[in-house]
Length: 389
Image (tube, rainbow, N blue to C red; front, side, top):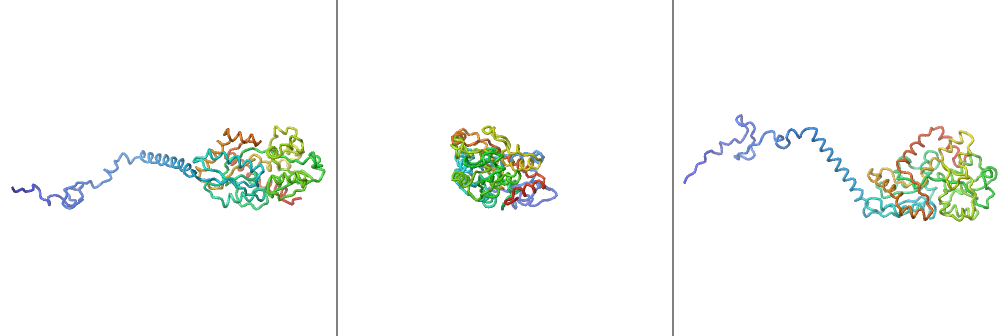
């Protein structure tokens, strides 16, 4: 049987023609009709509206948020965080750091281990320079150094290599109360004695509290003290007082005294001359604040700026430039640790004060202090500089 096609292949158009303006060839001799404006089939006109853009933006934001939340946990899982303490083993900063290290990791996504590394030197200046310039800026290194390091670039004279406002401030364990104190054997037992009788106090290095506070008391109030710098940390300074190498120490955290030498307090073996703080400790109600001895506006102005650092009593800090999601994760973990019953129980057992200040509050404090008029800063720098008369 013979069959003849009703249409021959040449009857199908193989190119556009006036008769078929919307047809393009896909394969020679094959009948497929495809609209010239193929986008009309792929994306209907209504989807090219502002609604499409809005949906895509929302999906991108949700995806980014989920990726960030997940990335923090994935980043820290199985890792170790190094906590650099700017002082030697056994002092107040070191003990605070070690207690914090045992609890902080539980509150960081991924639960990293935390290992303490001591890096004494220059009243913790060495550790501050390291954290700012050499430490990894990825959230695997944090530190605890002197509260004075935050003010050192502004009013100090040491070789700072950082901008305090660019550090990642995680928080502070306490709003600190420091004192100027002498041993029971010292002839200096009162504030009036401090102004009349020569005596020696221990120091660490330019920028540390013992050195800054002692120099301020000497040059602003006329104390007859002589600063002996160079001790690597609080434990060594306490030992120097015990041995009689120096009479005492100005810029000595009250919490550290309670921690390291509770028997000295119980047995009244210390003369507490003055409080170096913004408000009186309830345990030292009979000891005046330094500001209460100020008799001129100049003295009050200097004291307020220099003691402003006390709000960051035990600062926990990370290098600058951390990814924002890790910065916030560390801040949330710090805040959670400060209310953790296990952490608080250990801190109480070790006589550690916990009166925390959040990282955002530290940012604001530094902004306010660094907004001090330049002429006031110049005067303070001249007064507290090492060797200033």
